[in-house]
Every structure is written in C-alpha cells, then in structure tokens.
Image 1 (cartoon, one colour):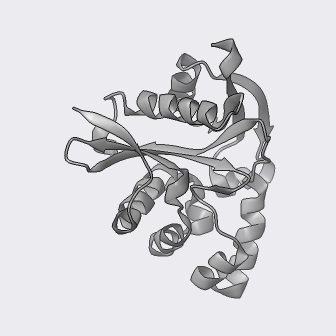
Image 2 (image 1 turned 90 degrees about the vertical axis):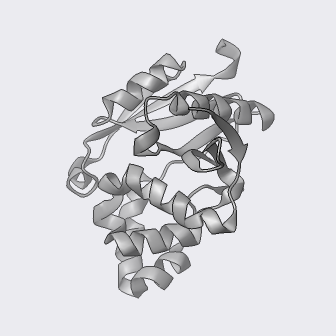
Image 3 (image 1 turned 120 degrees about the horizontal axis):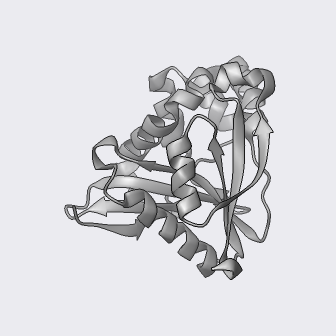
Amino acid sequence: MEFCITTGFDADERDTVAALYWQAFGYKLGRVLGPDAKALQFLRRVIDPDYALVARGSDGQILGIAGYKTSSGALVGGDYGDLQRVYGAWGALWRGLVLSVIERDLDPDILLMDGICVHADARGLGLGTALLSAIKAKALELEKSGVRLDVINTNPRARALYARQGFTPQKEESTGPFRYVFRFDTAIEMVWRAQAN
C-alpha cells in the first residue's frame, strides 16, 4: 500500500482523527473520558492539527497519526473549560484530577510524542515506522535534541517497535491504585537522542 506523511488535517477530518485516536487509546482512557460518544465529542473539540503528522493513503484517506506536544500546544490539549462543556462541572472536575495522574512534564530540549495510532486495517504496512521517522524529523526541524514517549507495560508490541527505532528506556513509573482506572500497571519512558544516531 502506498502512503505519504503530511502535516496537519482539515476541519472536515476532525471526526476521523478523533475516532482513530479513540480506537488506539479508548481502552486506556475509557473509564475516564467515556462513554464513547462523550469521549469523541471531547476529542473533536480539543485536537489540534498543528501538532499532527498524518499518514495518508494514495486516495488521501487518513491511515495513521503521530501527535506531539510542545510548550505551545499538543495534538490532544484542552483544559477544564473544554472538559466542562462536554461533561458538566462535576464530571470535568473529577476527570481533570484523574487525568493529571498521567500528565507528563515537558523538557524544553526534547519533543514529547503525544500519541501514535494506525488504523486497524493498515497495521503491519510500515506506517508506525514511517510516523516515528517523521516525528524524529520534526524534532530536528524544531531544533530539539530528541524525542520522548511513554509506552504502557501492556503494549509490548509498541515497545519493541520503539526499541527498533532507537528509543531506549529511561525510567518506569507505576500508576499505583489508578491501574484499575487506566488498565495498565506501569508506563516506561523511552527516549531517542539525535546525537546518538
């Protein structure tokens, strides 16, 4: 299958991007951002095309996305006001508090990957590898020294892909009692450094 990597997506593709992101992360975030209809409404509201690298098929269809985060913004941003508009005041309050458990600090010298997802029908075609290469190129374009990501312990396939692409484990963090909410026990921070390649 032929594909190319582009930057950003159009307004009429927000539903597609939100659905793809939820397909990839709904299991992990479902107990916090669910039900599905509310989660998709929230994602459509907060996703930012300025922080997305998109794998497209020869027909232009979105097959995968790699998001990133900087001090200026992120693929999936949003604040309490966005949560409140979708979930109401109480729903926004507890969701914001729970989501803060998995919030990651930014390092001004390292590009933070903010999710990577490939459509189920397009897996195994090299899109994940291509998107990771595009994220590395974006880091260099932004004059960053590397890329950081987190991979959960229940996703060994993704961890193996990241390792093949030069990402090395730095530390592991436990979710503690929140493992029952997010459905994973630990997250492994992995970093790719430009000067090492």
